[in-house]
Image 1 (cartoon, rainbow, N blue to C red):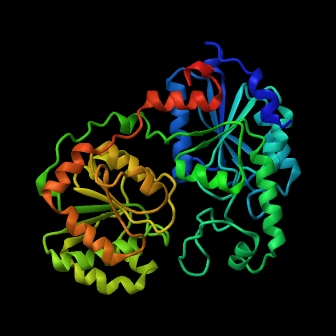
Image 2: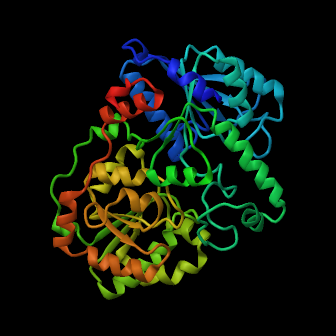
Length: 427
């Protein structure tokens, strides 16, 4: 009998238990890194605290000095990853790991909620579980790092071909410096750790199914969308479509190789050549950054001309208002994107979406209701969809049926289910 089987039924769901202290352990802090996983974890921390839970947040960070654990803000702490192995999945310095375990074990938490295992360590989780047998352990898997050594993105390392299933020989072809046996052992190590959690939370059904196919069957798994946080949830939503915005598109994000901005820029150049009234605003980077990463895009950018604008970095607090100034938000990622926050933000803004037809993007955006899909990685197909989207009638129809992002009350109920705090008859 594993840990989850032996402890789950012993944990009551009384009114007192529903306010059980929670410790959130995450691979980074959003004050230091702006990734989706750490932002989601921090918003959970704030939502639980606002709901009356006793909650702490312990986040990984890169810093030196004699102190390995530092206070950051009330209820928030940072721990140094200097003692970790190069892959940031295990600890090379056992003393550093044990110091962090002792610190975590002293927390009043009855529930430890992990976001990611990278920069936290499989060995740390196992040792903490031994140190705190009275607590329950839950993890949110934001990506497929356990399945795929290529940053959890399941894209082949040579080219940009999608990978649909992991296998030792296939993984070794992506990483020829490692023999197939390495991936057999890697999978076994991850599965052994993940199976010890009482519950696994997934931000999309897509990623849950990927883990089930891979062999993970936890005692409880819950699909729960990440929460945007009270500040963005309180921004008034746009209620009616503006016909003047139907042909105005916007991108929000960084020009990484996997975000598909190059696909969008090539597609937009084709679309605006056929429909000169279209416009595209790019938020999150400058033209020079894009050309630095994708130098062959220069002709497409020149072809788009003044119809294309770059606005650089933006404040996260302004994102809803910025999105409300666009007719469509485009998410052209070439990887699976399990639950991109930009989709939630656009839904909160009331701005329909155009997304790649794969992974969590296809799941979250209902075609014809929340937005439109285009064939992943295809500029010509995207150009066709952009022209279709510019029809004011289509834009108004989809704007009227667009889902909103998850509300705090619904999110907290989902957490209670994941934490095992909800009576069985209420689930």
